[in-house]
Amino acid sequence: MGDLLPRRRAARILVVDDQPSIAGLMSQLLSIRGYDVITASSAEQAEAEVRRQLPDLILSDVMMPGKSGYDLCRTLKENPVTRLIPFVLITGLSDSNDKVRGIESGADDFLNKPVLAEELIARVKSLLRLKEFTDELETADSVLCTLGLIVEGRDPYTEGHCERLSVRAADLGRHLSMDEDSVLALKRGGFLHDLGKIAVPDEILRKGPDNPLTPEEWQVMKLHPITGENICKPLRSLRLVLPIIRYHHEHSDGSGYPDGLMAANIPVLPRILQVVDVYDALRTARSYKPPLTHEQAAQTMREEARRGLWDAELVAEYFSMLEQQRQVA
Image 1 (cartoon, rainbow, N blue to C red):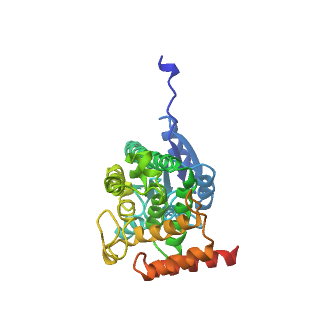
Image 2 (cartoon, rainbow, N blue to C red; image 1 turned 90 degrees about the horizontal axis):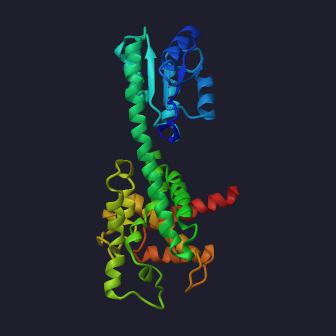
Image 3 (tube, rainbow, N blue to C red; image 1 turned 180 degrees about the horizontal axis):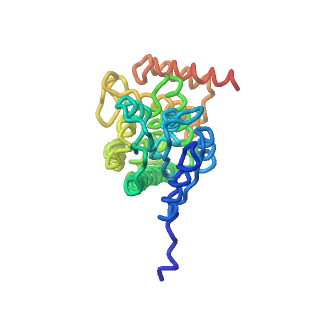
């Protein structure tokens, strides 16, 4: 029976060292314990290997010709695609300043030369367990984003809405020179902002202006940001997304829900997503209305911003970004 179960893939470890004897020894120590080991003799070759196939762990010498191990680590940690790969710096240097440089570059651990086999294996096992846990969190994020798309699919008029919000909100975050964590939160928020609607019945979701919600139904609808926040709250990786989920229906004049916040109390990330969300809604056809043109949507949003519904500065920045994108295209 056990033979019918899929075997777990061997962890892929990238060893980076310009000395073939050291790289070969480390490769042998790891390979005999069942790891899939690849070697690189320079940072540049290591980057090529990472682009070819992401490793589960990187062990890198510090001092190499050309790009150093510090630089390689910093480059990979600054890239959202590779930042969660555990990175171990191996050094013969003992100065505390060298370790500080390693910490500043984003290293997850250090090994001193000469490397002891027992210590090497112990560190590798520990970091791979951490990587496995991180991968599980990433999978959970993906499942929730898929649920967001399922919620979107309950309304035939919102097809593609989540993906458009994800892309445009992230674009606006970059336009505003926000850090990568915030940009990633906006990207995820595009998929997860209305996740709480999974608890709203179809007969409420599909009502339009010609068939308005009853007071009781409106109370149910106003709970969906709180429901979505509660679904995502257990995942620490989504901590920056939680305010987007809860507050994206708040209005700057305090007329929004679920908390009736005024402008100064609404965090910037939900205000960003809100601007993108409103624009997409205006530009999308519904059963009760045709889509507005870009110019009509811009005029409507600027007027509503002046009345205190949206953040006027963010509305201006959004249309400035769209104009720049049009010019480039």
